[in-house]
Image (cartoon, rainbow over all chains, first blue to last red; front, side):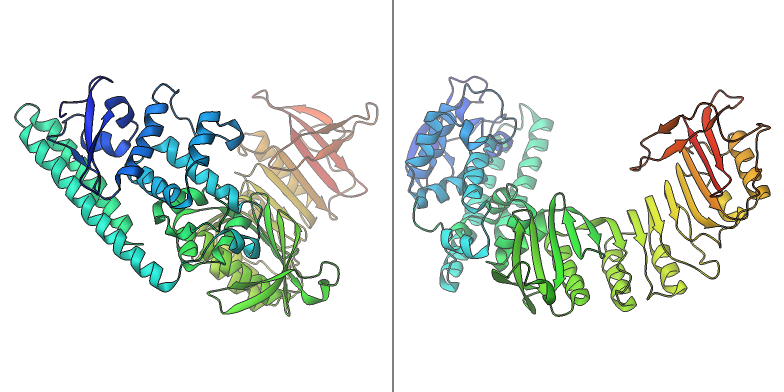
Length: 203
Length: 324
C-alpha cells in the first residue's frame, strides 16, 4: 500500500530483515518520527524497508503502536507504577533479547513513548545501586561480543542508508506534484538519516 | 528477565535515553563499569556543579561527592573502591546516604582535585559556585582547581575565597579569571589593593580596609553590598549615600558598611538621627539569597518615591540601608 498517509485507515506494508512484509496502520506508523520524516507526506512506492530489524521485533513494536493509537499525546515519561495492565503485560512477556531488539528498533523508529517506557524500565534495574550491585544485574560484553556488535551496527547503518535512498527515490517520483516541499522534505530526511548513520557508526 | 541484563548491547542512542533516568551518583557508578558508559555520559549529561573546598564536596543538584582524608574513615568505614581520572587513581568509598558518596584519600586536597577533575570530565560540567574556603589548602591546588574550571567557562555565578596560604597575587589572579555574575565573597585580609573587579550582584568582603570610595563607587550596579572592617569615612559614606539618593545605584537593595572610623554622630540626608529609639521595630528582607535584618531604623523617602530603612549603630560603626 503506497498512498500518502492522510487517514488512519491507510495501511502500509513493512518489510523486515527476513524480507517478509506485513501491514501496519497509518495511525500506528505515524507514532514513528522516523517514518513521519521519511514517508508521511510523500508516500512509499512499495513496502517500507525496515530491514535492519526482524519481523518479530517490528511486529512487537507496531503492536505497541497500534495499542496506543488512541492514547493522549505523549508528554514525558510515565512512572512504571502508572502503566496500564496491558502495558505491563506487554513488557513482562518479552524475553531479554526481544526487549533489547525492541528498544533498538523503537529508538531507530523514534517512537518516543515506547522508547521512554523501555528505557525507564532498564533504569529501574540500575537505580539506587552501587557499582558492585550494578555488575550483578548487568552483563558486561566481552571484546569479541563488542566486535560482533560493531559489525551489526555497521550493517544497520548501511540498511538505514538504503531506507533513505528509497525515500529519496520515492520523493523524486512525486516531485512534479509538490516540487519544492518534497525537495525540502528529502533534504530533511537525508540530514536526519545522516545523523542516525553517524550516531551508529560512532559507537 | 531475571538473568543479568546485557545493557551494553543497546545502541548508544538508546543507552543515552536510559541514562537520562539516572541521577549523578548512579551515573558515576555505571561509568565505573564500562568505558562506553563513560563516553556516553560525558557526551550527553550536562550538570551544573557547586564546588566547595571547605567541605571537600562537589554537588550536582542534591547529590554530593565528598573527598575526605583517610583519618575520617573510622567514622564511616569504606565499602568499596572506585577509580578516578582515567583509571589512574583509586580510592576507598562509602555511602553516607543514597545522595552522598564519601571518597577517602591519603591527601584530601589532592583527592579533592582528583575527584573534581574526574567528575568535570565525566559530566562535561560547568560550575555555578566555586568556594575556595579551605583555609589550609595549598595554593597550587587552589590554582589548579581554578584552572580546571576556567578551561570550561569564563563566567561563574558565585565565587567565595578564604585562604591563609594564598598570596594577594593568587587571589587577585583567581578573581580576575572569572566574570562573577551573582555573588562574590572574599574572607581575606589584603595589605594593599588586590585590584579586583566587582561585576556581581552581591559583594561581601570581610576585611575591607583596602576599599576606598573609588572601589565603593565601582559597586553602584550591585544589589547587595556588605563590607566589614572598613575604613570608609563619614565623607565617603555621605558621598555614596547621596549618589544612591540621586538614583545612581538603581539596583541597590541592601547596604551594610561596618567602619570603625565613622564618627559617633554620623548623619545623612538631613535626618536628625539614624536610629529610631521610640519604635524599636526590625525589618527583614530576602535579597540575593540572604535575609538581612535591620533593627530600629528610620524611614527615608527619596524624591522619586523610593522608600528605604536606614540605620546607624554608633557602637559597632554599622551603617545599614534597606530599600523597601
